[in-house]
Image 1: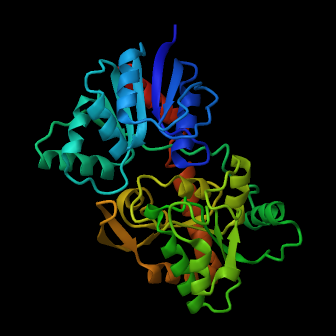
Image 2 (image 1 turned 90 degrees about the vertical axis):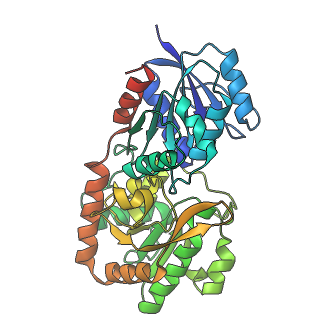
Length: 386
């Protein structure tokens, strides 16, 4: 008989949390009867997890539902702030609780961390996250739960080179995306496919691309932004216009919010673009870079937080300077746009260098990375109490 599992988190397709939770629901489907409580609205049901609420839920809602339910175990998949809020509210639920938690920025000591001690197992993505969390708990003399490091997976069956010959794969993808009369066979296309939200610092991507064009003024180059034109972050079109690069932009659409795309469309996009660029000021994992790299494309990633650990020796690492984000009261790092511009210029002018980083990125995404089945198996062990 299957055990009953309650999952709690964000399952909206098209975003990082939703992609991961969808993969986990699939991995758990044969072992558990799953009910999902979604923390956002509107909610779109996952295939293997019928459920949820018509409005945004808060920690008190979750704690009440857990106390009234008869689930054998609960899995929380969310960011550190959300997990802290939930664990503080559900201390007396009596249900076995495992959390798989995103930590983007260095953890700041806070009494809110106290609730984490009630978890039976807490899994984080990287050793950076584990060490930062344990240090913050120690500074406050707070007890620590059992903390495990569990990296994300990468679906190399979904994200892959369209052809073994990289130029041919790029041409196939561009023809499919732009039509056969696009006149961009030789264009150097830089991709940022992150969500346009404050932490991703898309403004720095635009500034870096402007500096790159200053170095190579006649470059046949475009910047592809797979994101909302406003969302929660930068005003893309006004900023691009002020930098004089609006005619260099390629966009998935003109919606203000993040565009909805199928995995098949994303694989075409990843194959079509030459280089991936992440200018986030803090990063827990960075799914986009791994998915893009799985198609054999070089990556430029920040040399800080999760990226600094995950991509060392496999990408062009962008130096960054620490600062304090006053709006969100967190530690963050601003990447060096001049360094990005220099690296883009090198990759643009040196095809052999680009091929080297293509191969390094591909290896990192396809050999060094777990499958989602591997991730699910490890989580299932902790859910079962091992």
